[in-house]
Length: 73
Image 1 (cartoon, rainbow, N blue to C red):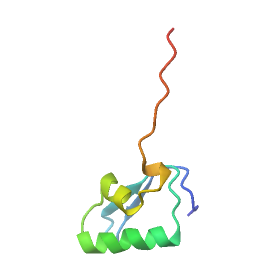
Image 2: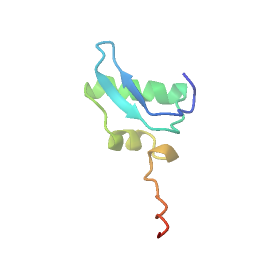
Image 3: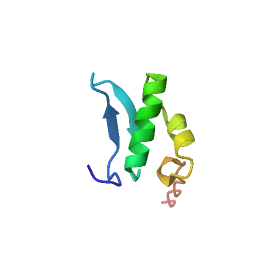
Image 4: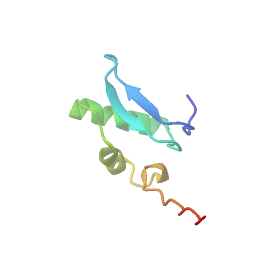
């Protein structure tokens, strides 16, 4: 798996249940991988965007994107 995701990635557990959805541009390091699984084992449920943002507040891929307005026709 590439370190920086080029497409969204759904992490699943051994039962094939979704753990979380990682966004495009997420830098999936070993440390982040371990933190995700530690929190999942603690919560024992799907982790949403807000929980990922709490774990990794400096990760730009988790922050809201500013969309450019469309030019008038």
